[in-house]
Length: 178
Image 1 (tube, rainbow, N blue to C red):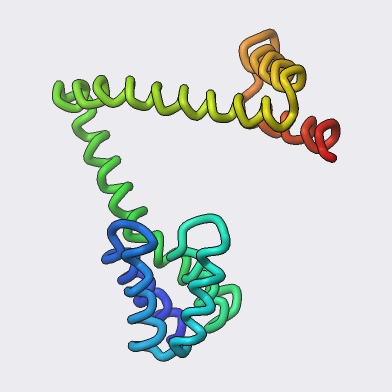
Image 2 (cartoon, helix red, strand yellow):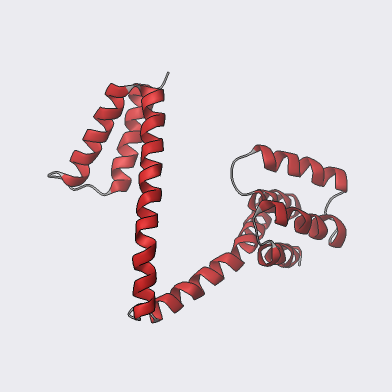
């Protein structure tokens, strides 16, 4: 029964917490402190402080912690899944709708308008990565990694980008760790 309560509590948070962490925090508090009494206000404040200090979405970190405290690993899995399930369900429904109407002129026009924005965002991200690599490893290492990556992906071997990323991580761990 505890897993069911965890699921319901964090599913509601996922459904109603539109806007990210700041909107989810009071909902998590209402469920964990007020409704189910899984913790006190002081314990909730401590969990919130820890969740704010760690990277990633606050609601899922809090769900994982509270779920673990209530029902160990299974509780953590149930709570985290419940907190992301509403978004996952909505995304799958929207993708099905988009797939159904993919040949409609309005959808084609919409994707044509979105592509340049995505290209600009990817370019800005690549520039940020290049700048951070240059500042961290120097120009020589950055140019070498960029050239080797391009060669591996577009040259004779045509490696999948995931493999190139893994190789770059290994290279960084071996040659760039200090």
